Image 1 (cartoon, rainbow, N blue to C red):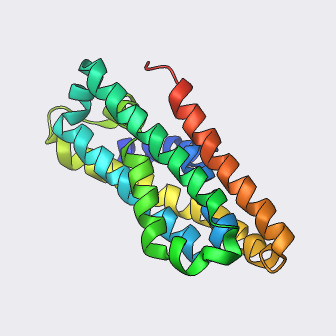
Image 2 (spheres, rainbow, N blue to C red):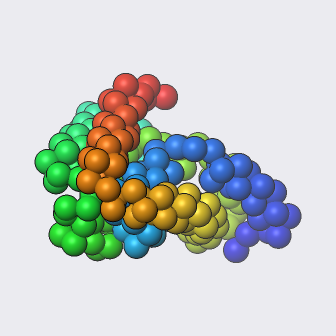
Length: 206
């Protein structure tokens, strides 16, 4: 589906993107600090799944619709802001990671939250539309090429963000044994969610 030389040129570009700290890495870091390794890896999987959803949407042309309709972009963007703020408030109300781990930080919920955070960020689709076409041959079927390139991008992110999440999870589990540190981690996690919400709210459309 994709020329080997094109794929080899895409790999270092994708690796550089995966290594750049961003919203995805911050979210996985927050989940690791909040609930440990299992929620961190579940969130990591949710981010990768969300990436593939956005890649498929871009490949099908839905991203172009979002890019052309400012109203749709704004609705999705502010829905993402509201969801991240809700996560921040819910984290503070939980009383700290150690007090709500079984219910609030199950792997399923961490996966779902990460998926929603990724999908409700329209900038991801716009970025994919700007980046992936550079490596797509228009003379061949476009969607399979988008999906393959997106898979490479998602797998690279899964490995790198997973390392960050596992490290944060180990630290988080050690610190949550102390109620004081558990509360501090709760505030740090809420702060990360709030920072992501602010970043999404203040970002430029282009």
